[in-house]
Length: 98
Image 1 (cartoon, one colour):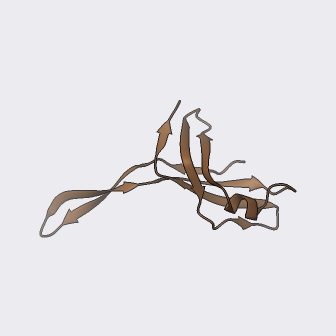
Image 2 (image 1 turned 45 degrees about the horizontal axis):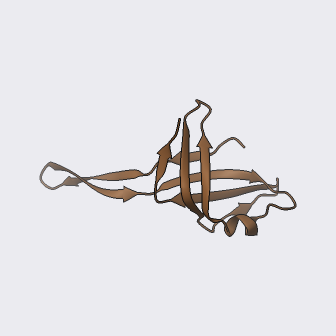
């Protein structure tokens, strides 16, 4: 489905300031994927909520492709009245594969 959002793993940078800007400090950032699935008989919020240690592949319309291994569902899936399941997945690392 369209509308997925992928954030690669890496580092998050936060500026360090005082009387001037001294630079930045960095902290690790996990990879995340927010996406939607069509709800159907064998795919439900409960099923997706139980996903852990899964491999996910994200392919953008531009052809750029990223892989998330050992990913897990964050457990906050939701179902709309239109039959769409919204889900968010996290992985320690991601890798660009194309």
